[in-house]
Image (cartoon, rainbow, N blue to C red; front, top):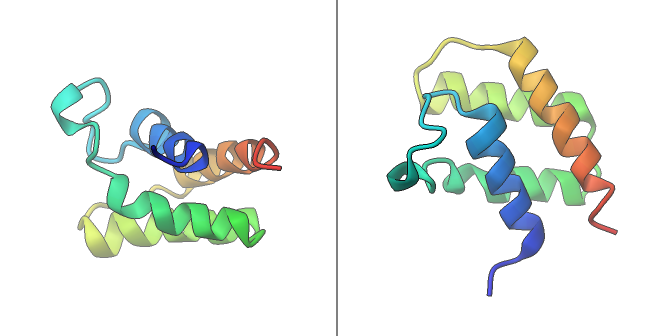
Length: 88
């Protein structure tokens, strides 16, 4: 059985973040799973929102070779912060 917190983070990355545009493609549902655990760890240790956004930016630029999208990363990090409140 999967951790419900991790499933929430995976869903946010797939549906809201989606830097390579695979949202809605069922075969690519796990595309961002390798980053979800790192995001969850940041949330669980109460990292600030800007640190989560910076991690998403690092993934985009350094791991995916995409341009940085700081506004979108900040929006997704804010959403993840809201979800963190459900973890308790």
